[in-house]
Amino acid sequence: METEIFTICDFAQDAGGKLTIVGTFDQIGTRTFPVIHPSCSLACRLRFAEKEAGQHNFKVRLVDSNSKEIIPSIEGSINANIPRSAGYAAINIVGNLNQVRFEKAGRYSFELYIDNNWVTGLPLNLVQLS
Image 1 (cartoon, helix red, strand yellow):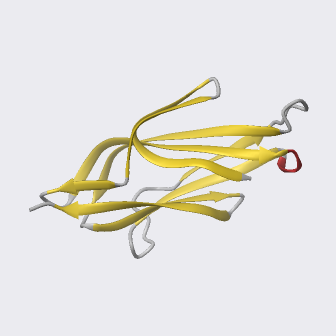
Image 2 (cartoon, helix red, strand yellow):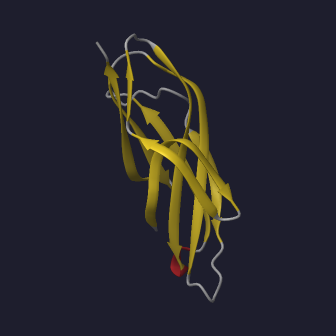
């Protein structure tokens, strides 16, 4: 399995296998903490080979620098149904996050797990503006 895309953005959607991503970012600046970020999306595109066909579980965690979860993890399952003519399956996962509260400035991370194995991480820096 390959991770083709894993990003935070202003908006994402999966429309019939086409992944739309608008406004990707990795930093939020604010003058005061705690801060509530009104909305964002998490977009992920995974590619599975023939030998990886079938059902897979996924989990995404948003954690602070001490590995404490900021929101409940996002969990689900996907089916890598691979057409014979293609030899692979591309699967899009989109999650919309609303009203996420960040207590302090620092580095946060989105962590992606497939079948309980860590696959990749994505930093999100919260910056105190003067």
